Length: 195
Image (cartoon, rainbow, N blue to C red):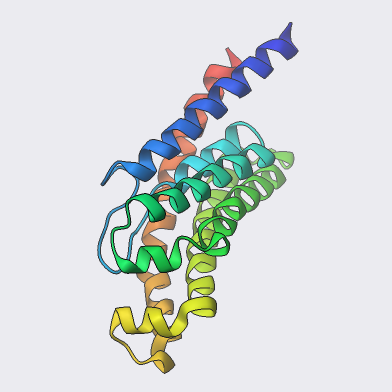
């Protein structure tokens, strides 16, 4: 009976978080804060919560939903020509999002084994968020460095410095938000499961 209850809970939460990811992706200002040419996100928090509440695998699955939804949005509702260039590439759109679930889940469960759930949540949320930022910007530089530098109106030789600045500002902000919000939401969902 308890196994059936856990399975039902998992399917319900997985469905809710996946649906929430899709809504966050397509509804303006709900999952992203468009500040051209950047697009700071809070969607990664949903992926991190899935990795905490369900499992690392489920966090990766919700990350996959996010990446695929982002690709669909780039094709159907591009905010700029840069969207079509960057977000239709699955390495940029999907891989970092799946890695958010992987990193957050592995870090959290490592801390959980040491009975350090709260510290693990904060640490895993911050690292999961930074994983997304670093991988997305790294892949953009790798595949479309010149085009992205042109869009930012910077010399391509200075692109890495500019990207480091984005990580230091936008990326840190996203990581702090994840470290504060993800543990709060995950703790509430875990209490529901334990009842």
